[in-house]
Image (cartoon, rainbow, N blue to C red):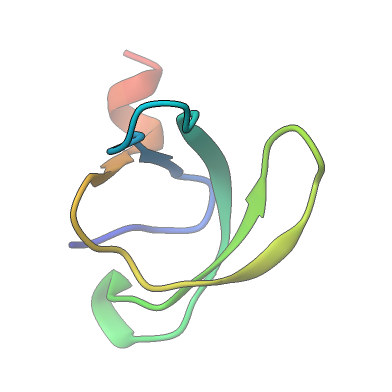
Length: 66
């Protein structure tokens, strides 16, 4: 997985009753955009390190804008 500052992380819920999560990548800790990522999560604005797995996808800023 590769992400850059400003990209969006989307995590699809995998269990009934859970909700999808989305957030903005604030920092990448590996050269070339590898994880972990510092993400500010939508909704509550919580920031934390995120190690993507399973149902996580990256929406690149370039792709989102055109």
